[in-house]
Length: 308
Ligand SMILES: C[S@@+](CC[C@H](N)C(=O)[O-])C[C@H]1O[C@@H](n2cnc3c(N)ncnc32)[C@H](O)[C@@H]1O
Image 1 (cartoon, helix red, strand yellow):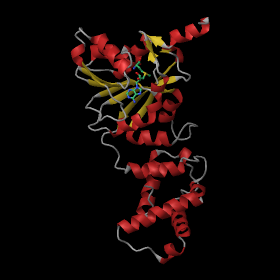
Image 2: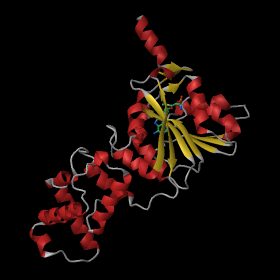
Image 3: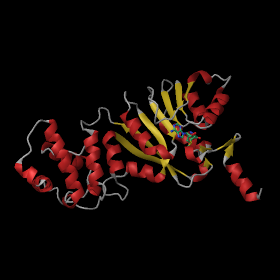
C-alpha cells in the first residue's frame, strides 16, 4: 500500500475499528477538549447524563466518574461492544446503561443533562427532539458543526440569523461556548466544530410551535425581503387561502362572498390591513427578534390567518 493511503487508513481507525463516516464517526481524541466540555457541563454526582453517540467512549468514561448514571444511545453495534469492553469489570460498569438504537427513533429516557459530541448528520432533528423532551432537563452541552452552532446562537441582524435561530431561541437559552479544531478528532472532519450550551425555557412560551414554525418557513425563506413583499407572492397567498378555508370549515363558519370570489385577493387585503395597522410591512425577518415574530403571529392568528 502506498505510504499516503497507509497513513489515511491509520487515521480512520482506532482500537481496530474502521470508522464509518455515514454514522458521523469522528472520535474526540483531544483529552483537553473532553475536559473542557465536562467542565462546562458541570455534572453533579446526582445527575443522570444522556450521551448521544458515545462512540468508543472517550467522553463516557470520564462522565461515569462524575455522574450518578450515564445513559448512552449508540446506533453502531461495534461501538456498543467497544464501550462495554471498556467498562467491563470496573466499578463504572454499574453506572452505565447502553441503549443500542437510533437516537432519532427511540423514546428518550429521563435525564438531567445531555452531553454529546453529536453525529452531525442528525443535528437538526435531534436538537428539536431534545427541546420537545419532557420532563425538562437542566441543560445540554453539545458539539455541532461550527456553522450550525453559530446559526443556533445567531441574533437578529447577524448574517447567520435564520429560522433555526428563531426556533431554538423560542424554546431555549442558547450560548456558544468554544470552538474546536478539526484536529481534535480522528479522523478529522472536513468542517470546524463548536460547543454550545442549550438551556430549555421552563415553562416554555405559550406558543403553538407548529404555527410558529409555519410562519418561520414562509418569512425566513428570503429573510432580507420586507414582510409586505413576502406576503404578496402567489404561492404564499395560495397556501394561506387554503389554510383559511380549512380553519373556517373546522369551525363550521361560512366563507364570505369576497373570499369565494377571489380567495387570494381576499387574503392579500386582509394581510395588508394587518401589516399596515402595526407598521409591520417594512420589517424584514432577518432583523426581527422573537418578540417581533410573536407579535406578528398573534396578529395574524387573531385575524384567522394560520400557518399550519
Ligand atoms: C461524532 S461521533 C462521537 C463519538 C464519541 N462521543 C466521541 O466524542 O469520541 C458520533 C457517534 O454517534 C453515533 N451515531 C450516529 N448516528 C447515530 C444515531 N442516529 N443514533 C445514535 N448514535 C448515532 C456514531 O456511531 C458515533 O459513535
